[in-house]
Length: 290
Image (cartoon, rainbow, N blue to C red):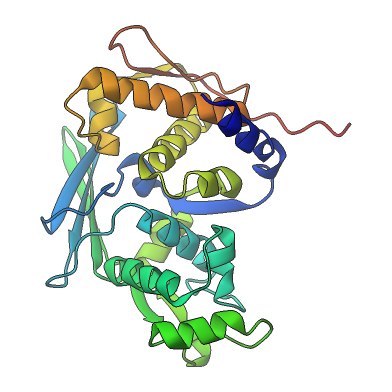
């Protein structure tokens, strides 16, 4: 790892204990695609126990609209965080999301935002928990409705007008905001996973790093005993499709090294050869008060 990257990560050691993002657990255990794909659906698998597994199928329900991918997961996480309380995104300014992830305020930035939102609005999620004796299913359409600026020009004007009432609440029947589907909101409330905003912002444009960080931090925090995650399981969860397994492992090892700069006491580690990832129970240490 370069000295420049270490220097960029070190200040996050205190920041990660401040603001949090919230994501529904199924999205941590079964990731969205990293790149745009042409098929309208993709399925991920995650082992929940010795005899049970989670199966998540992501589907785009609007013709011509691809599945969410790449940095779309950041917008999705932000909407979940903002709407966690009552199912509505309640904020004062369109700049909230742009500032949360260090994004510019121009019309082109808003066009990218709008594309991400279109893909998220087309997203349907099917969850299934399979055991030898039963299958429990849940179908969700996360974003029920949105009210946003109608064009990049309008958005750019609003973004430049600091202090103006750019975004108002959906529940007041005004023009701007987001509303979660009640079933997805209920699932999020029952299965929230907090993630450090500072670290996820650092990985904003690196979706594989985002997903691996979310997975290893959640699994380590939730663990009660040692657990070994094989590379096959990691590929099913994270969708790693690199046919060269050594290169894929090297990529994950590199991401884990970056996470360890921020969380030096994180005990998760890769085992020799292709034995996989060892998850160890962990609670992050709080920064010193000195």
